Image (cartoon, rainbow, N blue to C red; front, top):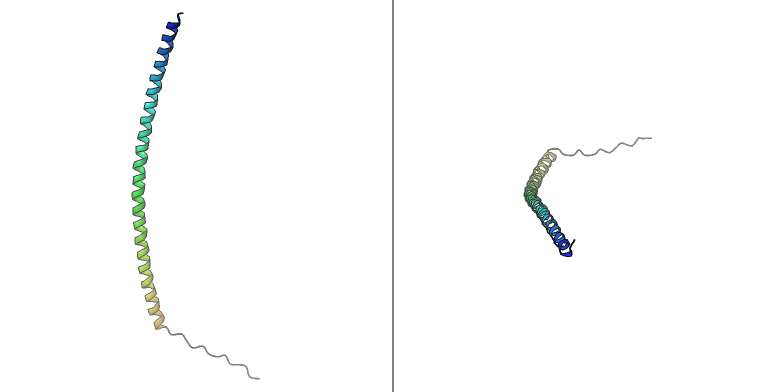
Length: 95
């Protein structure tokens, strides 16, 4: 075989291989971009939900504080009705 013919075959095969690898790499990159887009959308959803949960927790804390104040008022009112009894001294046994 002539050296130029061998070079032509080599360059032809190399060109086909480069085109095939380039197409496969392009497909992989497109797939990766779709996955990253989905991950971005999911992270935005999670961030929004986290903010809503944070707001809900703030509301619950405020409600608990308000109810604790009411419960304290009720307890102080109830303890105002009940007066503690004076302790009686125990009689010492007489000898």
